[in-house]
Image 1: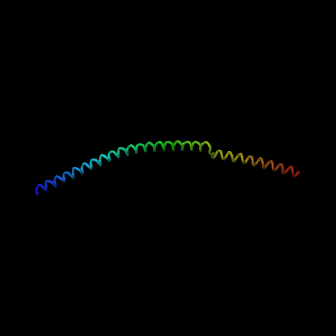
Image 2 (image 1 turned 45 degrees about the horizontal axis):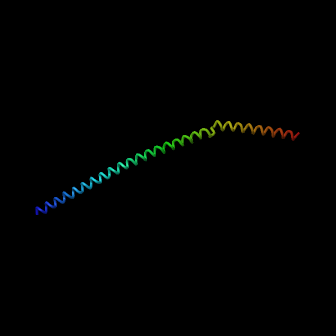
Image 3 (image 1 turned 180 degrees about the vertical axis):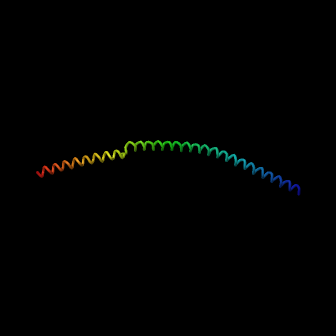
Length: 103
């Protein structure tokens, strides 16, 4: 009976050793995968920063274009003033033509 207990104990120790060895291999595998993941993550961060800078540059170009090409309130007021002056000039000419035709 003691022989059997000794063998069971030996098998139990052997099983525990195998399990720890397997666990060690899994940990090593996870470390490798994590380090590879870190490299991938770093590459993604770098790519993300490049994209962010490119978008910011395009946005700045768009803002510059809008500043240069869009009319301001002052521009609209000046245009309205010129249009009113033209309308007044046309009205005056039409009025004169009407007077000339009437006489």
